[in-house]
Image (cartoon, rainbow, N blue to C red; front, top):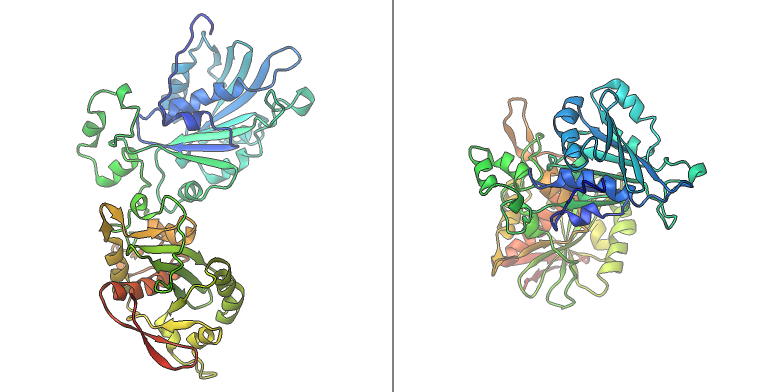
Length: 467
């Protein structure tokens, strides 16, 4: 390639992905944003870092995976050839779909595999390679992604120096590019809660000022592309938002805006006596709690969450709730807003579930209603508030289960007719959202100037006025 150098200048939003050294790096972006080209150029980036063998050649092997052979032929391979032309950057064996990339002291075998061919899948799962590239990874089955992780880093073999860089550090990598996947899928969950071995990169909305690649496109490209398209299509392919789940409509689909309501930095409680920690609690066999505070600025801060599985309320209080309070809210006044049904006496011992909280030393206040529509309205009222363009309702990023519910998991169930149920689906996200609604119902009363009644452990009723 010395006589036909390829000049590639990535946009600033692509550089962190292109140069990422994590074991797994994934990028999502709008159409035309240059992410696929960056994924192909990343092959050369990592191949150039491979430690040379005894003959001075830096050898590596990359496998590029696409969901079908037709898509490989129509899109993936042409993108690769744009930057690494056949006969200039190396030689291409069309039948096998193998490209031998050669430049300077680098020699990298690039194998293209479509997943609609059973033989290609078998060969993929038996490969020994250095790198794995997933083109449009949202369309690739998680089993392939997981299996591929065990195939990279195996070429060159240890006997030939190993898959390491010049410093002897591992040079095994998997990366991929895609348009935004749908919510409530493996890929959405992986991208929002990645393991420590992975880095996720989200390019900005193509219609925003941060879209720094538009100079490479014709003027008005995205505006023209959006004409005649549905809002859902535009969200995915232009705005780089997760697509709508096919399982049903999220309850807060119109009121919750992730980039507005999710705090950019960690949230901390304000240690003032007039600003108690409100703990929303849901009972059942999966008790959970959400911890909130209305701060001096009037903001509703959702600080942390505690979840459980197959656990009684007393065990939950002893092993989950109280240790969490002691660790994160020592010295704070805390007030529990439990499921109103917990105030009803149990048939066996005349005790209530709330009594278990009182016996553990917690003050309790009864939320005003247990009707889902009223509770949801309270949350939406708080979500809609803003101060000088900033959200008054902020959620800490550590509240993973609550946030996944806000994004997609807490939703209205779809009937066989295609219509939606009137009440949210009872699923793994409904418990933490019920707890959140109990707490927000109390905070909403405070905002509207109402007085909430707090019952202490001694069963002595007192009046508590939120300020």
